[in-house]
Image (cartoon, rainbow, N blue to C red; front, top):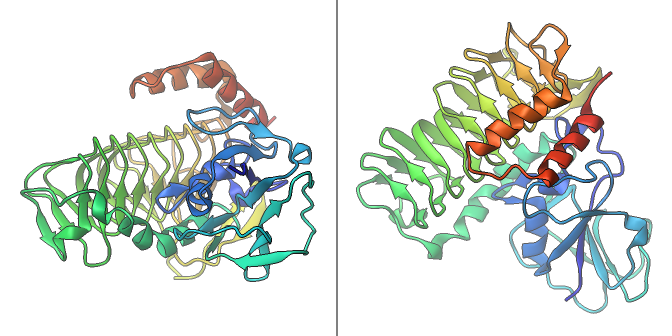
Length: 386
């Protein structure tokens, strides 16, 4: 089998905050699956490594290692982490040398002994449907464009739960070993709802499709629509058009809309995001003084891995809360620095950050290993601001 490598941006920069330097872009969710998983599914190949250094040494569980792209020779496929292919299979003919989306090359097919050259335009090019990703805000574009089709893939893998109220075709509520209490309402007229093994949906919940609830995630009540929840999340309240990468907590009331939550985020009770400006204008982010035009009307908050908010936290439209930040003590700015301790300019120490992370992982029965500790130490060193 030809090896697959995920090519990271040379310098992800502010547009990918709060994940720049924290985790590979390939490990972010675009629709139901991580970008790496989308490429592997489309090409029928196994990803062997990510190519790039911005998150070198990142370790979580099943992700491939990081390598230097200059060392790669064919046969191989190098696929761009900044593109999310749609769910359809992409066959690779022997003469195929590039995959393109419009006039942009998004993958390179290397022949035996050939070295990677990103400027090459020779050979047969095959068009691929999907979403170009310009930054974290593009994950919201991918959610809107890919989620219905992604959820439909699961139609033959499960059955509708008993005792639920279903608006629309019951076949579009797909429970794959999930627990659903009586009285849950599913509205699948806009798209399917998928509940993976070990997921739990409690009475008092209304879920509107398309929505994907990952393995072990608990939906504790409230109104959920058009979301993706990765594994082992705890969610409650009103949540709209948002992506939870996994292991995140929003276990209380409060509104979260058009937001992206990294791993191990915890939102205190009543935390609420604004996702629409009072002027109804397009949202601009500002990261370390750099303006980023999203071209979107709806943008909530982007939370980096291990970020936390106090009870009653109110977040303005287009806020970025960086990795490890702990927001308390007053209204936060639109950009919260990595490892911020409150809103007064203090910073959490490396050892403080690691102590909290160890406690948090144990609450999901995730092992605290030396590899994880070393990965988070690297993250702290990369993201820490002087």
